[in-house]
Image (tube, rainbow, N blue to C red; front, side, top):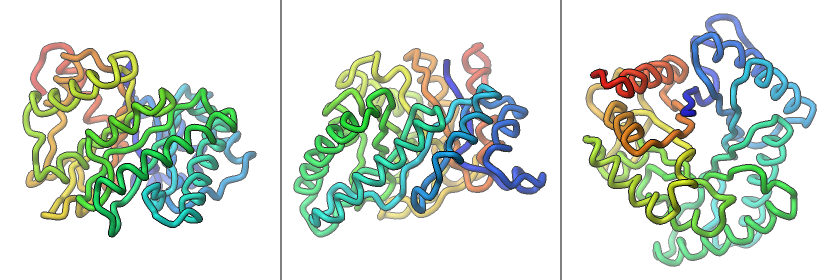
Length: 287
């Protein structure tokens, strides 16, 4: 079934006096949410014992776990030594995810740098084939590794690029960050048709079975001509995208992703707002 939850701990989590990730399991459960994404954004600095402890807490509350690999992964880097570090970041994230008992690892694929875009995309694809081999060699093939659509024009990660990367091997499942898509495409997501066009393209290329439970990041995002500037909350009325048209599209296409809120400071609150919108849309009500 479709699941909703926050990326990391929101401001209200700490305001209530919570300090440990294990406490986030009950925090999320008590708000009627279903999943939680742990971020290794600044590096994988966790012991296996800590990962197991976090996993036990979330398993007890029946909350699904995903992780976000370090932000500075770049499989288009022309420096082979730096590419090796990127492999390590994903592998280390996957190992901690497995110890937690989670199933999904999101990662940023690449940045264009000084290369022509075609060169950067081709190098990224070749490196993802190597990553695939490393993942199998490390017995991580039972997990989903999710390259993410990116919000800045200079980053590798359009809908088409992410789809092509996922065609490399079934171990890759798309993470579609609709805020990123909207930002890099200068406010393109307005109607259900806008969402449907992109998701139907991915279904056609990857198949319904692989897309049914894909991964979603959602937040409103401020953007400029260069794409993403910063994450906002659902209360923002200037920048999009809106969630209701996506909810309608998910119902129409019978898709059941994990939907992770990346709102700025109100991740859990906005995840619950999205869940309620989805439930009303599914019943045929207006949000």
